[in-house]
Image (cartoon, rainbow, N blue to C red; front, side, top):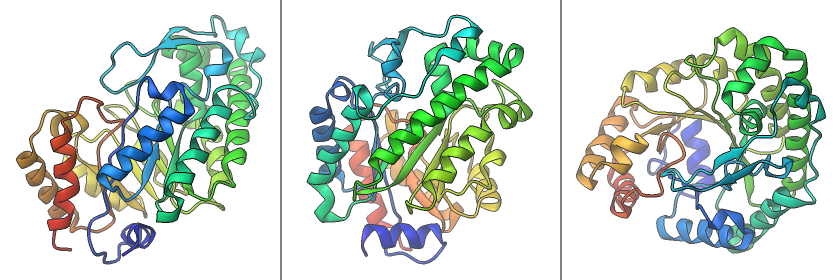
Length: 331
C-alpha cells in the first residue's frame, strides 16, 4: 500500500495494511543552511521510511528576519532560544510588516523544500511543512509575558501585528504551493493552553488568524495537521478545524485518545510521549506502549507519532523500535 493511500484510509477510519507512523525532530545547526537542513531531513527519512516527512526548520524561521536574536544553546528539542525580542512596548506591534518570501529565512526555507523535493519526489513521500500560528509567531517576537500583557491591555495594537504576521505566513504558503511534494502544512499552536489563557481569550484573539491560514491551505493540500502544545491543551477549540489530524503533548492518558476521536472526525496523531517513551524508554517499553495504544484505538483513525517536537537526544534504537513495531501489528 502506498503511503498516501495508507494515510487517507487511516484518516477515514478504513482498514490499512499497517498502522501509519512518523516521528520528527529539529536539526539544530543544520537548520541555519538550506542545503544542510535538506540533507539531514532526507537522510532521516531514508533511514526510517516514515509515512510522511515533517519538515522542521528553525522554530523561529517565520520571524527571524524581523531582527530577533536567537541561538541554539543545547535545548534537547533542538529549539533556538531568543535572546533579544523586537517587541518592547505595545506600540511596536503597529510597526510589524509582512515579510517577502523572496528574501532571508523564508527564501532559504523555500530552497530547502526544493532540495528535499528533488531527493524524494520519485518515491511519492508526502511532505508537511511546519508553520507556526500567528499567535505563536507573536510570542516568538515578543515573549509570552509581553504578548499576554498586550493581549489584555492593548488588543487593538496586537491585532495589527497579528494581521501582518498572518499575511507574511500566507505569502510564504503561496510561494511553496507549486512544490509537488508538499502534501500540506503542520501548524503549531503553543498558546492554546488553559494554563496561559482562557478559551474565550484564545478564541477572540487567535482563532480568526488561525482560520485565515486554514482557509488558505484546505483547498490545495490533502494532509494538514494542527499541533496543540502545552500541558492543558484546548482540544475542543480545534475539533472543527478543516485539517486531517491533530497532534498534542501526549500524557500517556489513553482517555485523551478516545476523547479526541469522539470530538474530531479526522485522525489522532500521537500515542507516544516524547519524553517518557521515546527519550527515556527502551525498545521493549515502546513495543508495549504501541500495542497498548493500538488496542485502545482498535487501530482506527490513528497515526502513530510522538507528542511534540521530538528530542534530538532520543536513542536511535528507540526510533528503530517504533518503526519496526508497526510492521508486527495485526490490523
